[in-house]
Amino acid sequence: MQCIYAITQSKEESLDKQEKFLALSIKNTYTLYLLMLSLLKELHTMAAERVERSSNKYLQDEAENVPDREKFVNNRLLVRIAGNEMLEEELKKRKLKNWYYHEEYVRILLKKIEESSYYKDYMAAPSSDFESDKELVAELFKEVIAPNDQIYEYFEDDQLTWVDDLPLVNTSLLKLIKKAKPDHFDSYFLPKLMKDQEDMDFAKKLLVKTLLNNASLVKEIEGKTPNWDKDRIADIDAVLLKMAISELLNFPSIPERVTINEYLEIAKEYSTPKSSIFINGILDKLVKEYKTEGKLKKIGRGLL
Image (cartoon, rainbow, N blue to C red; front, side, top):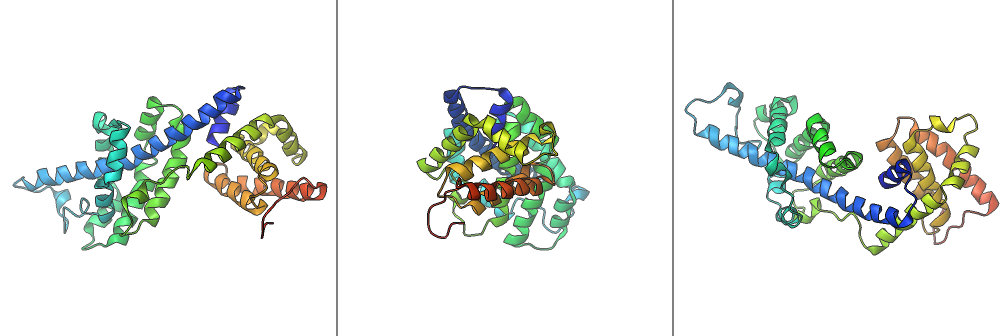
């Protein structure tokens, strides 16, 4: 979606360049994911260093008057992420030292975290377990880290396309945090963006079919929105509709309901509050029409 949106905005017409842009976009998205995950690692490291320094002071700050000053650095989920050897290998392989060279962003975030009510309530509680540790990390990531303006501006300055990828990356990482278990292997936080070549082939085909048939897809959408000016349809909604229609017509092994539900979920995450209702209405009309005209040909058992 993000790739098609960017290409549509740039008016780029070369299919070869579009496919290369897709491959580069996927690679850059994973790099951004590694940077956001490693940010948690660096926050833990800096917090641990602060605890170590404070333990050598004769007088403790009032802010440190909590049951266990080391509770945050002993957070079970943060410890797992900080000690993730596979993450460390990936960072070394890609030579990603962004937070080492820009430590000030880690410092800013750690200060914001320590000022937050989530952190204060957690530190004030007499004890914790993996679930409460995980809940803290999820809340801090969602409410403090992900929406931080300085981090957003850093990525915008470093690589402009990352701004488009950031919501996807943050949403994916937050979901992994919320579903994390004590016995998960290091690989849990390092999922593959593409399971195999078949996934990449699917992405390329969807990209090409959507872009090559842009004019006819626009007509399909306009035909089902007589009271809508096309300029009033959100850009993201238009891209999602084009992709959904392309998937419905060109991928017979994917059930129509799976396609529709997939794009409704994406709309809820990335577009306006009413987008999913709008998109669902148009796709329902088109599916009925395609069935009547014999355009919708699905194969396989149990497909709708």
